[in-house]
Every structure is written in C-alpha cells, then in structure tokens.
Image (cartoon, rainbow, N blue to C red; front, side, top):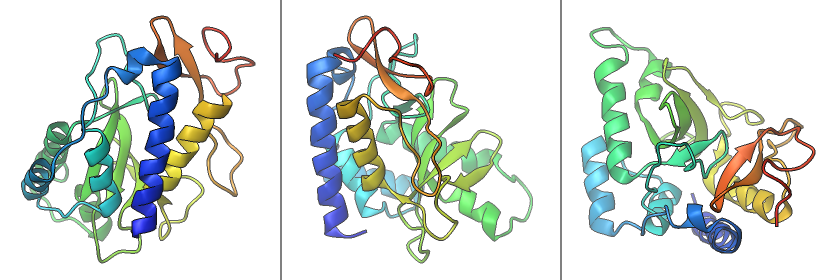
Length: 219
C-alpha cells in the first residue's frame, strides 16, 4: 500500500472520530489510544507476519476498543467491534492451533492461516481481516472471516483485488456523515446495514432496509 493509502486512512478516521464525538460519545469513549511502534512490532513478532502499512497505521490511530456485554461496541459494519493488538494476536494463534490441525494444507488453506483479524462480532464467529502475504496482489486487502474457517474476498472485488482498508474506512465515514446504508463496491448494489444511534450515545448498525435508522433519525 502507498503513502497515499495511509494518509487517506488517517483522514477517514478523523471524519469518523469527529462524527462519533458529536453524535455517539458512548462509542467514542470505548476507543483506545493508538499503539506505539514497540507494541506493533511485538504483535508482528507474535504473529510472525509483517503488518501491511495500512493495518499498522490503523493501530497507530486506535488500538482497538473496550468491549461491552450488551453488544453496544459494534463500531464497524457487520456489527463488529475493533480488536486490540493483543486480541488480534490471540485470534491469529487460535486459527493456527485449530485450523487444519495435523493435516497437510493446500495454498488456499494456508492463506487462511496468514490472515490478520482486526474486528469480530460479539460471538466471535465472524469479522474482518487483512491479507498479510506481501508477495500477493491481495496484500493488505480487506476480507471477511468466519469461525468455520471459510474466507472469501469481500463481495465486489475478485480474488486478486480486495477492498483496500482506506477505501473501506472512507465508506464508513461517508455512511455516518450522510446517514445512509453501508454500500458494497461496484458492481454490487447491495447494502449491509445503516448507522443508527442507541440510547446512551452508542453507534449501532440497523437493518439496511429500515426507513429510518434504528432508535429514530440520525441527529
């Protein structure tokens, strides 16, 4: 990923943080401070992977978020929460311990083990990850993961062209600012939830076909 990508990611996060501070202070308070270079290097050593530049930049902005038992920490689409670096390391280690244990793996299965998860839903059964293989065109690209080990490039991008992390963050920022559903990239027209506000100033993702956001219109 280029320097332009990390700069666009930082700009998108400024927009997200600004919106959260104004409309969803409960969610804003859950975000942790960014990680320093020492902690990022420690996570790289623990996972034995070099973080794609945009993922490292992501964690410099916020090292995940505090979690809640009531599910009101779903900052990201698909009702997922940001993982801390420590949680990323644990999730990655779990995949290595459990997936394809004791059997030979093919190239696609090995790729599953080289993913770096940075978001998960409340039940930890699905979430978001980036490809950590620098030799591949998909390096740093966004994908979804599922607990059964299934992975697919995010809909709208073929296997050789995943959705860049900074473009994904820009789409999230636009959804918040405009109060519109989260939209998949072309050629798909499908949406995956729209931002809404829960009591206490928490961002949630309502159903994409709701006429108005859950708990009333966005302020």
